[in-house]
Image (cartoon, rainbow, N blue to C red; front, side):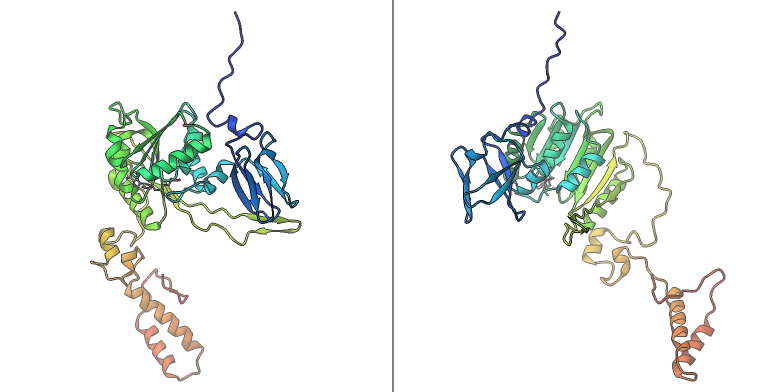
Amino acid sequence: MSTDVPTPAPPTGASSRRGPLRVGERVQLTDPRGRMHTITLTAGAEFHTHRGRFTHDDLIGRSDGTVVTNTAGIEYLVLRPLLADFVLSMPRGAAVVYPKDSGQIVQMADVFPGATVIEAGVGSGALTMSLLRAVGDAGRVHSFERREDFAAVARGNVETFFGSPHPAWTLQVGDLVESLPGSGLVSAEGTGADRAVLDMLAPWECLDAVADALAPGGVLICYVASATQLSRVAEAVRASGRWTEPEAWESMVRGWHLEGLAVRPEHRMVGHTGFLITTRRLADGVKPPLRKRRPAPGAYPVVEPEDVATGTELADDDPAAYGVRPVSDKKVRKAARNALAGAAANRAPGTADETLADEVVAGEPDAPGETGVTGGAVE
Ligand SMILES: C[S@@+](CC[C@H](N)C(=O)[O-])C[C@H]1O[C@@H](n2cnc3c(N)ncnc32)[C@H](O)[C@@H]1O
Protein backbone atom coordinates (compact mmCIF):
# COMPACT_ATOMS: atom_id res chain seq x y z
CA MET A 1 0.00 0.00 0.00
CA SER A 2 1.37 3.38 -0.98
CA THR A 3 1.92 5.80 1.91
CA ASP A 4 2.27 8.78 -0.41
CA VAL A 5 0.03 11.65 0.70
CA PRO A 6 -1.35 13.50 -2.35
CA THR A 7 -0.19 17.11 -2.51
CA PRO A 8 -3.23 19.38 -2.05
CA ALA A 9 -3.98 21.84 -4.84
CA PRO A 10 -2.67 25.32 -3.97
CA PRO A 11 -5.32 27.75 -2.69
CA THR A 12 -7.01 29.86 -5.37
CA GLY A 13 -4.73 32.61 -6.55
CA ALA A 14 -1.61 31.28 -4.83
CA SER A 15 0.16 29.88 -7.90
CA SER A 16 -0.27 33.15 -9.82
CA ARG A 17 1.65 34.88 -7.04
CA ARG A 18 4.69 32.62 -7.45
CA GLY A 19 7.19 31.67 -10.14
CA PRO A 20 8.21 33.51 -13.31
CA LEU A 21 6.11 36.39 -14.67
CA ARG A 22 3.44 35.19 -17.09
CA VAL A 23 1.33 36.58 -19.91
CA GLY A 24 -1.90 38.13 -18.57
CA GLU A 25 -0.44 39.04 -15.16
CA ARG A 26 -0.48 42.57 -13.79
CA VAL A 27 2.93 43.87 -12.73
CA GLN A 28 3.91 47.09 -11.03
CA LEU A 29 6.76 49.20 -12.42
CA THR A 30 8.51 51.74 -10.20
CA ASP A 31 10.77 54.32 -11.85
CA PRO A 32 13.80 55.96 -10.17
CA ARG A 33 11.59 58.79 -8.86
CA GLY A 34 9.22 56.35 -7.18
CA ARG A 35 6.42 56.83 -9.73
CA MET A 36 4.39 53.70 -10.30
CA HIS A 37 2.74 52.23 -13.38
CA THR A 38 0.73 49.02 -13.52
CA ILE A 39 0.73 47.01 -16.77
CA THR A 40 -0.83 43.72 -17.84
CA LEU A 41 1.80 41.56 -19.53
CA THR A 42 0.86 40.95 -23.17
CA ALA A 43 3.10 39.18 -25.69
CA GLY A 44 4.46 41.67 -28.25
CA ALA A 45 3.14 44.78 -26.37
CA GLU A 46 5.31 47.77 -25.44
CA PHE A 47 5.49 50.01 -22.39
CA HIS A 48 6.49 53.48 -23.45
CA THR A 49 6.72 56.92 -21.93
CA HIS A 50 8.10 60.13 -23.43
CA ARG A 51 11.46 58.87 -22.11
CA GLY A 52 11.92 55.53 -23.83
CA ARG A 53 10.23 52.12 -24.06
CA PHE A 54 10.66 48.39 -23.54
CA THR A 55 8.66 45.39 -24.69
CA HIS A 56 6.61 43.20 -22.35
CA ASP A 57 8.52 40.24 -23.82
CA ASP A 58 11.53 41.56 -21.89
CA LEU A 59 9.64 40.66 -18.71
CA ILE A 60 7.63 37.55 -19.59
CA GLY A 61 9.39 34.52 -18.13
CA ARG A 62 11.61 36.66 -15.86
CA SER A 63 11.59 36.49 -12.08
CA ASP A 64 9.41 38.67 -9.83
CA GLY A 65 11.48 41.46 -8.26
CA THR A 66 13.53 42.07 -11.37
CA VAL A 67 14.78 45.29 -12.99
CA VAL A 68 14.18 46.20 -16.65
CA THR A 69 16.03 48.99 -18.52
CA ASN A 70 14.23 50.94 -21.27
CA THR A 71 15.67 52.30 -24.53
CA ALA A 72 16.68 55.56 -22.77
CA GLY A 73 18.55 53.70 -20.05
CA ILE A 74 15.89 54.27 -17.35
CA GLU A 75 15.58 51.40 -14.91
CA TYR A 76 12.23 50.14 -13.60
CA LEU A 77 11.78 47.86 -10.63
CA VAL A 78 9.28 45.14 -11.55
CA LEU A 79 7.10 43.50 -8.87
CA ARG A 80 3.82 41.64 -8.73
CA PRO A 81 1.40 43.93 -6.86
CA LEU A 82 0.40 42.85 -3.37
CA LEU A 83 -3.29 42.80 -2.54
CA ALA A 84 -2.84 46.21 -0.86
CA ASP A 85 -1.30 47.60 -4.09
CA PHE A 86 -3.93 45.97 -6.27
CA VAL A 87 -6.95 47.47 -4.47
CA LEU A 88 -5.51 50.97 -4.74
CA SER A 89 -4.89 50.69 -8.49
CA MET A 90 -7.86 48.56 -9.63
CA PRO A 91 -10.95 50.03 -11.37
CA ARG A 92 -13.40 51.47 -8.83
CA GLY A 93 -17.12 51.98 -8.88
CA ALA A 94 -17.65 52.92 -5.25
CA ALA A 95 -15.02 54.03 -2.72
CA VAL A 96 -12.94 51.09 -1.50
CA VAL A 97 -12.07 49.99 2.00
CA TYR A 98 -8.40 50.87 2.42
CA PRO A 99 -5.94 48.09 3.25
CA LYS A 100 -5.37 49.44 6.76
CA ASP A 101 -9.08 49.01 7.48
CA SER A 102 -9.55 45.66 5.74
CA GLY A 103 -6.67 44.33 7.85
CA GLN A 104 -8.48 45.51 10.96
CA ILE A 105 -11.78 44.07 9.76
CA VAL A 106 -10.35 40.61 9.13
CA GLN A 107 -8.59 40.59 12.48
CA MET A 108 -11.20 42.23 14.70
CA ALA A 109 -14.14 40.36 13.16
CA ASP A 110 -12.11 37.19 13.69
CA VAL A 111 -12.62 35.95 10.15
CA PHE A 112 -11.15 32.44 10.14
CA PRO A 113 -10.38 29.83 7.46
CA GLY A 114 -13.58 27.95 6.62
CA ALA A 115 -15.86 30.66 8.04
CA THR A 116 -19.15 31.69 6.44
CA VAL A 117 -19.23 35.47 6.06
CA ILE A 118 -22.06 37.76 4.97
CA GLU A 119 -20.87 40.91 3.22
CA ALA A 120 -22.84 43.98 2.01
CA GLY A 121 -22.35 46.09 -0.04
CA VAL A 122 -19.66 44.88 -2.33
CA GLY A 123 -18.86 48.15 -4.10
CA SER A 124 -15.62 47.59 -6.02
CA GLY A 125 -14.81 44.32 -4.25
CA ALA A 126 -11.75 45.50 -2.32
CA LEU A 127 -12.89 44.17 1.04
CA THR A 128 -14.31 41.05 -0.60
CA MET A 129 -10.79 40.02 -1.64
CA SER A 130 -9.47 40.27 1.91
CA LEU A 131 -12.43 38.27 3.19
CA LEU A 132 -11.95 35.57 0.54
CA ARG A 133 -8.30 35.26 1.42
CA ALA A 134 -9.13 34.95 5.09
CA VAL A 135 -11.84 32.28 4.73
CA GLY A 136 -9.89 30.36 2.07
CA ASP A 137 -11.27 27.99 -0.56
CA ALA A 138 -13.20 25.95 2.02
CA GLY A 139 -14.96 28.97 3.48
CA ARG A 140 -17.83 31.01 2.15
CA VAL A 141 -18.27 34.72 1.48
CA HIS A 142 -21.82 35.53 0.47
CA SER A 143 -21.83 39.11 -0.78
CA PHE A 144 -24.86 41.30 -1.48
CA GLU A 145 -24.72 44.38 -3.69
CA ARG A 146 -27.80 46.26 -4.74
CA ARG A 147 -26.23 47.91 -7.79
CA GLU A 148 -25.69 45.61 -10.72
CA ASP A 149 -23.05 47.89 -12.26
CA PHE A 150 -20.98 47.90 -9.05
CA ALA A 151 -21.35 44.13 -8.80
CA ALA A 152 -19.88 43.82 -12.31
CA VAL A 153 -16.87 45.96 -11.32
CA ALA A 154 -16.35 43.85 -8.20
CA ARG A 155 -16.59 40.57 -10.10
CA GLY A 156 -14.03 41.77 -12.63
CA ASN A 157 -11.64 42.89 -9.90
CA VAL A 158 -11.96 39.69 -7.86
CA GLU A 159 -11.41 37.46 -10.89
CA THR A 160 -8.45 39.55 -12.05
CA PHE A 161 -6.83 39.35 -8.64
CA PHE A 162 -7.35 35.64 -8.05
CA GLY A 163 -6.84 34.73 -11.72
CA SER A 164 -10.22 32.91 -11.84
CA PRO A 165 -13.61 32.92 -10.08
CA HIS A 166 -13.12 32.20 -6.37
CA PRO A 167 -14.79 28.95 -5.20
CA ALA A 168 -15.79 30.48 -1.85
CA TRP A 169 -17.57 33.49 -3.33
CA THR A 170 -21.27 34.02 -4.04
CA LEU A 171 -22.18 37.45 -5.35
CA GLN A 172 -25.88 38.23 -5.19
CA VAL A 173 -27.31 41.39 -6.73
CA GLY A 174 -30.02 42.79 -4.48
CA ASP A 175 -30.70 44.71 -1.31
CA LEU A 176 -29.39 42.87 1.75
CA VAL A 177 -32.59 43.19 3.77
CA GLU A 178 -34.71 41.82 0.93
CA SER A 179 -32.27 39.15 -0.32
CA LEU A 180 -30.80 37.70 2.86
CA PRO A 181 -33.92 35.81 4.03
CA GLY A 182 -34.08 33.75 0.79
CA SER A 183 -30.32 33.27 0.45
CA GLY A 184 -30.10 29.99 2.35
CA LEU A 185 -28.02 31.69 5.06
CA VAL A 186 -30.88 31.93 7.54
CA SER A 187 -31.26 28.58 9.28
CA ALA A 188 -33.97 27.57 11.73
CA GLU A 189 -31.30 25.87 13.90
CA GLY A 190 -29.54 29.19 14.29
CA THR A 191 -26.26 27.87 12.91
CA GLY A 192 -26.29 30.48 10.12
CA ALA A 193 -23.31 32.60 9.24
CA ASP A 194 -20.27 33.08 11.45
CA ARG A 195 -19.46 36.69 10.63
CA ALA A 196 -21.08 39.68 8.93
CA VAL A 197 -19.45 42.79 7.49
CA LEU A 198 -21.47 45.84 6.47
CA ASP A 199 -19.97 48.69 4.46
CA MET A 200 -22.89 50.85 3.37
CA LEU A 201 -24.61 54.13 4.11
CA ALA A 202 -27.27 52.85 6.50
CA PRO A 203 -26.15 49.62 8.22
CA TRP A 204 -28.66 50.18 11.05
CA GLU A 205 -31.42 49.29 8.60
CA CYS A 206 -29.92 45.80 8.17
CA LEU A 207 -29.38 44.82 11.83
CA ASP A 208 -32.45 42.61 12.15
CA ALA A 209 -31.89 40.82 8.84
CA VAL A 210 -28.27 40.13 9.80
CA ALA A 211 -29.22 39.00 13.32
CA ASP A 212 -31.60 36.43 11.77
CA ALA A 213 -28.73 34.96 9.75
CA LEU A 214 -25.85 35.17 12.22
CA ALA A 215 -25.12 32.32 14.63
CA PRO A 216 -25.13 33.16 18.37
CA GLY A 217 -21.72 34.59 19.27
CA GLY A 218 -21.20 35.62 15.64
CA VAL A 219 -19.43 38.91 15.01
CA LEU A 220 -20.88 41.86 13.13
CA ILE A 221 -18.52 44.61 12.04
CA CYS A 222 -19.66 47.81 10.32
CA TYR A 223 -17.48 50.29 8.51
CA VAL A 224 -18.94 53.80 8.40
CA ALA A 225 -17.51 57.06 7.16
CA SER A 226 -19.04 59.61 9.55
CA ALA A 227 -19.54 60.07 13.27
CA THR A 228 -23.28 60.51 12.73
CA GLN A 229 -23.52 57.05 11.12
CA LEU A 230 -21.41 55.62 13.93
CA SER A 231 -23.81 56.98 16.52
CA ARG A 232 -26.85 55.63 14.68
CA VAL A 233 -25.39 52.14 14.38
CA ALA A 234 -24.44 52.08 18.07
CA GLU A 235 -27.88 53.21 19.22
CA ALA A 236 -29.68 50.82 16.85
CA VAL A 237 -27.54 47.92 18.12
CA ARG A 238 -28.44 48.79 21.71
CA ALA A 239 -32.12 49.30 20.95
CA SER A 240 -32.41 45.95 19.14
CA GLY A 241 -31.58 43.91 22.25
CA ARG A 242 -30.10 41.10 20.12
CA TRP A 243 -26.49 42.27 20.33
CA THR A 244 -23.74 42.83 22.85
CA GLU A 245 -22.59 46.32 23.76
CA PRO A 246 -20.89 47.74 20.65
CA GLU A 247 -17.27 48.84 20.50
CA ALA A 248 -15.96 51.42 18.08
CA TRP A 249 -12.59 52.78 16.98
CA GLU A 250 -10.67 54.23 14.10
CA SER A 251 -7.13 53.56 13.01
CA MET A 252 -4.62 56.06 11.75
CA VAL A 253 -1.53 54.95 9.93
CA ARG A 254 1.36 57.36 9.53
CA GLY A 255 4.23 56.46 7.26
CA TRP A 256 7.82 57.26 8.14
CA HIS A 257 10.47 58.81 5.96
CA LEU A 258 13.69 56.79 6.20
CA GLU A 259 16.89 58.36 4.98
CA GLY A 260 20.13 58.16 6.92
CA LEU A 261 19.61 60.25 10.05
CA ALA A 262 16.56 61.98 8.57
CA VAL A 263 14.13 59.52 10.08
CA ARG A 264 10.81 61.23 10.77
CA PRO A 265 7.07 60.88 10.16
CA GLU A 266 5.90 61.57 6.60
CA HIS A 267 4.43 65.04 6.16
CA ARG A 268 1.32 63.61 4.51
CA MET A 269 -0.98 60.86 5.65
CA VAL A 270 -4.46 59.53 4.97
CA GLY A 271 -6.05 61.32 7.91
CA HIS A 272 -9.51 59.78 7.80
CA THR A 273 -11.01 56.77 6.10
CA GLY A 274 -13.79 55.47 8.34
CA PHE A 275 -14.83 54.14 11.73
CA LEU A 276 -15.26 50.51 12.68
CA ILE A 277 -17.85 49.25 15.10
CA THR A 278 -18.27 45.66 16.26
CA THR A 279 -20.82 43.76 18.25
CA ARG A 280 -21.68 40.09 18.77
CA ARG A 281 -24.96 38.26 18.32
CA LEU A 282 -26.60 37.20 21.57
CA ALA A 283 -28.37 33.84 21.78
CA ASP A 284 -32.12 34.09 21.21
CA GLY A 285 -34.09 34.98 24.32
CA VAL A 286 -31.05 36.35 26.14
CA LYS A 287 -31.30 39.89 27.42
CA PRO A 288 -28.16 42.01 27.12
CA PRO A 289 -26.71 42.57 30.63
CA LEU A 290 -27.51 45.99 32.04
CA ARG A 291 -24.82 48.55 31.41
CA LYS A 292 -23.10 49.41 34.69
CA ARG A 293 -21.89 52.80 33.59
CA ARG A 294 -24.50 55.51 33.46
CA PRO A 295 -24.47 57.56 30.25
CA ALA A 296 -22.85 60.96 30.64
CA PRO A 297 -25.36 63.77 31.24
CA GLY A 298 -26.38 65.23 27.89
CA ALA A 299 -25.17 62.15 25.95
CA TYR A 300 -28.70 61.47 24.78
CA PRO A 301 -30.66 64.33 23.29
CA VAL A 302 -34.25 64.68 24.44
CA VAL A 303 -35.44 64.20 20.84
CA GLU A 304 -34.87 61.58 18.14
CA PRO A 305 -31.70 62.01 16.07
CA GLU A 306 -33.85 63.02 13.07
CA ASP A 307 -35.17 65.92 15.06
CA VAL A 308 -31.71 66.87 16.18
CA ALA A 309 -30.58 66.98 12.56
CA THR A 310 -33.45 69.25 11.55
CA GLY A 311 -33.42 71.17 14.81
CA THR A 312 -37.21 71.00 15.08
CA GLU A 313 -37.40 70.56 18.84
CA LEU A 314 -34.09 71.89 20.08
CA ALA A 315 -32.72 75.20 18.91
CA ASP A 316 -29.73 74.95 16.59
CA ASP A 317 -27.57 76.73 19.13
CA ASP A 318 -28.66 74.50 22.01
CA PRO A 319 -25.64 72.36 22.98
CA ALA A 320 -27.96 69.52 24.02
CA ALA A 321 -28.89 69.12 20.35
CA TYR A 322 -25.35 67.91 19.78
CA GLY A 323 -24.99 65.81 22.90
CA VAL A 324 -22.94 68.51 24.61
CA ARG A 325 -23.35 68.57 28.36
CA PRO A 326 -25.45 71.57 29.36
CA VAL A 327 -23.81 74.04 31.74
CA SER A 328 -25.84 75.05 34.78
CA ASP A 329 -26.48 78.73 35.41
CA LYS A 330 -24.96 78.29 38.84
CA LYS A 331 -21.73 76.98 37.37
CA VAL A 332 -21.56 79.90 34.97
CA ARG A 333 -22.17 82.43 37.77
CA LYS A 334 -19.39 80.83 39.75
CA ALA A 335 -17.02 80.94 36.80
CA ALA A 336 -17.93 84.59 36.29
CA ARG A 337 -17.20 85.37 39.95
CA ASN A 338 -13.78 83.78 39.71
CA ALA A 339 -12.98 85.42 36.39
CA LEU A 340 -14.03 88.87 37.61
CA ALA A 341 -12.17 88.41 40.86
CA GLY A 342 -9.03 87.49 38.90
CA ALA A 343 -9.45 90.53 36.65
CA ALA A 344 -10.09 92.81 39.65
CA ALA A 345 -6.93 91.64 41.35
CA ASN A 346 -4.97 92.91 38.36
CA ARG A 347 -6.56 96.39 38.34
CA ALA A 348 -5.73 99.54 40.23
CA PRO A 349 -7.58 99.81 43.59
CA GLY A 350 -10.91 101.70 43.49
CA THR A 351 -12.01 101.00 39.89
CA ALA A 352 -15.65 100.14 39.14
CA ASP A 353 -14.89 96.65 37.93
CA GLU A 354 -13.10 95.76 41.12
CA THR A 355 -16.17 96.85 43.10
CA LEU A 356 -18.44 94.77 40.88
CA ALA A 357 -16.24 91.72 41.30
CA ASP A 358 -16.26 92.20 45.06
CA GLU A 359 -20.04 92.36 45.03
CA VAL A 360 -20.46 89.25 42.94
CA VAL A 361 -17.95 87.27 44.95
CA ALA A 362 -19.50 88.36 48.21
CA GLY A 363 -23.08 87.80 47.00
CA GLU A 364 -23.07 84.02 46.46
CA PRO A 365 -20.92 81.72 48.57
CA ASP A 366 -19.86 78.29 47.28
CA ALA A 367 -22.17 75.45 48.28
CA PRO A 368 -20.69 73.00 50.83
CA GLY A 369 -18.36 70.53 49.17
CA GLU A 370 -18.19 72.54 45.96
CA THR A 371 -14.76 73.43 44.77
CA GLY A 372 -14.40 76.67 42.92
CA VAL A 373 -14.24 76.89 39.13
CA THR A 374 -10.79 78.28 38.78
CA GLY A 375 -9.92 78.50 35.11
CA GLY A 376 -11.65 80.60 32.52
CA ALA A 377 -13.04 77.57 30.73
CA VAL A 378 -16.55 76.35 31.41
CA GLU A 379 -17.16 72.78 30.24
C1 LIG B 1 -18.71 52.05 -0.06
S1 LIG B 1 -19.38 50.83 -1.10
C2 LIG B 1 -18.61 49.35 -0.56
C3 LIG B 1 -17.15 49.27 -0.91
C4 LIG B 1 -16.53 47.92 -0.72
N1 LIG B 1 -16.58 47.49 0.67
C5 LIG B 1 -15.11 47.87 -1.23
O1 LIG B 1 -14.19 47.72 -0.41
O2 LIG B 1 -14.89 47.99 -2.43
C6 LIG B 1 -21.01 50.66 -0.46
C7 LIG B 1 -21.86 49.77 -1.35
O3 LIG B 1 -22.97 49.32 -0.62
C8 LIG B 1 -24.05 49.15 -1.52
N2 LIG B 1 -25.26 49.08 -0.66
C9 LIG B 1 -25.76 50.06 0.12
N3 LIG B 1 -26.82 49.61 0.82
C10 LIG B 1 -26.99 48.32 0.47
C11 LIG B 1 -27.92 47.31 0.85
N4 LIG B 1 -28.88 47.56 1.74
N5 LIG B 1 -27.80 46.09 0.30
C12 LIG B 1 -26.83 45.83 -0.61
N6 LIG B 1 -25.93 46.75 -1.00
C13 LIG B 1 -26.00 47.97 -0.47
C14 LIG B 1 -23.92 50.35 -2.43
O4 LIG B 1 -24.58 50.15 -3.66
C15 LIG B 1 -22.40 50.46 -2.58
O5 LIG B 1 -21.95 49.77 -3.71
